[in-house]
Length: 338
Image (cartoon, rainbow, N blue to C red; front, side):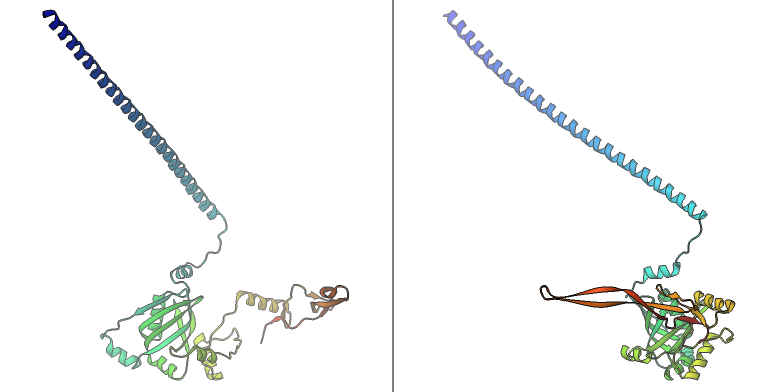
């Protein structure tokens, strides 16, 4: 009886040990799997860190290359500036005109409203017209600034209440509401259109003024006919007095002084120095001078040769003939006097 109980306990103990061994094996296997997963995660993270480190190193190399390139460009620009100083100076464009072109492009319209106030009311009534007029001014150089135009018109023509600027290629068209000075009010009522503006106490510019409500067709018809008169160098009067005399003498309503260019002056001086009589002949590319010293103009002619073939139908072709005709050139010369 006692031996049977001992055997039973032994079997139970053996069974418990087997279960414990199985449980321990499962736990160990789970731990090993966990360790493997952790090792895989660590390896993956190390690989990611390594890739990011390599990417950062590549970026730093690119940044250093760009910095080096920028330093080289800066040094080259400095060397070019030094070389340019030693070289012959080139003609530079007018900075004022370039700046004005960049600010106001073609077709740009700028409006300004000027508040006159009541402080100069007595002065306005004494020296300026009673009512305001809508006037448009033409021929104003485009490189003039808006403030400069406003200042010149305010100082010379009248008191501006509203002004609008429009750039048209080389010139500006200015439309405004203003009260003429009494002198310009008289000129306007008599049909005058001439306005003179002196810029920087240096050069006088001539612009035209019209009623803003005048149709463009009327404006174009008004300037349909023009006349040119040469002024001698010994004229002592200033431009304004010369234009006034021309207006009175020829019943004109607008005048403008055109300065002779350097080329024209050089031609005139050559004529005077070498006594070339009536002027300097202008020679075309194909013209030539004959034995008598006369300028001959060459005119190459083309004739049309028409060949007829019954078998091939009608056919026409252009043939250039091998002859040219020469005849005295028409008057193409610069005369010293008109």
